[in-house]
Image (cartoon, rainbow, N blue to C red; front, side, top):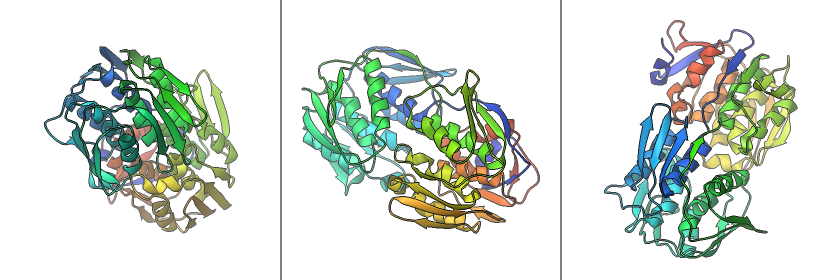
Length: 437
């Protein structure tokens, strides 16, 4: 069985084979790729994104931007984008964000710049994710936007945004603020974004960094950011950095099995998940950062942790899986936003780790995991959630008899995940079949 074939399997059983070790390159960052695509689409000229992430999410973004008038072409490993200078066209059909939250939110904001707006929708799972705070913010800035009880589908009337001060509730997603900021240079007057609530605000800072690199004039204020109107983004030729979120899933394999995994293209980054190495250290892993990349070496026995994941709630899946292996009780705090992602991740983790005999208490904003000795056999559902599938793989590399349903859902952000696992020596087979890689 080829590694490409695993994306089409109904389920796979991973075969524990001792410590997982080796060096691989993580994929390009989804967060950076989708932000750069939006900036390039609004820029006045042609941009080149060197080796961006080619995944379901980035393809969804590229397709929506193309429908809004930005020509996006794939040239080998690179993507070329012909920008619109902010003069977006009205698409002839509803824009489909598929399962991509960044696409739905960013495209909703910039669709205000099209003469007659656009309608934005997505897959049923995406319709369950909130967009109301973004709609409220855009209305405050003078846009005409209608949502469906705070969710998709959304109808944007177009005609631009007036600008001015706006309070943005980021409790349920930092993407609401990033979306407004990305469109703000094209407002009629300056936009002052004031943030309300808690969120992974480092992702907002990442957005601002990329905007400034493309020529936007942005100032930090006491409550948020001020974006000067009247400019356009400059076209750029830029290499997309590695995905720190994906790197954590690779490092988790080492942590779970007592191996050592090097992510060879990991570099200093503004991505919040780059600080995941600190949590690995709390679990008792050895961390080595240097010219060869970032290496995580797992201990003989993981330690329980009590940590806040407010800056990187996506990693609740990764660290919940490791906490299941650590004796005694671990607490993962400030992760309530994970209930609003591809699925209710806290409820899903409690249910699926429970299949392995692990008791998990899922509160509104935290997980308490009584770890120790998870046992198979068990089939773990992934709820069409790429991060659950990748996190459960680390467990399956340690616990015999674990089968992972719908392994192909990793294609949302990491289509080569199973290939890269094979490079690290992991083996699996289709559930009920023989060995395969």
